[in-house]
Length: 64
Image (tube, rainbow, N blue to C red):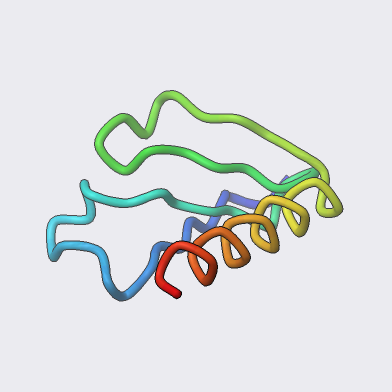
């Protein structure tokens, strides 16, 4: 299995500890907190898409 490659938002702080990191080159989608990289969760691509869609919808509704 390849080494996990973690991505974070460019809006995160320079130290990388104020963010949620995402890894897509593992089975499923992995998520972890930047300040606690040893803890995380794994989910299916479809569940992750639903999370992102729900978050976007909530953010749009909240800022409106």
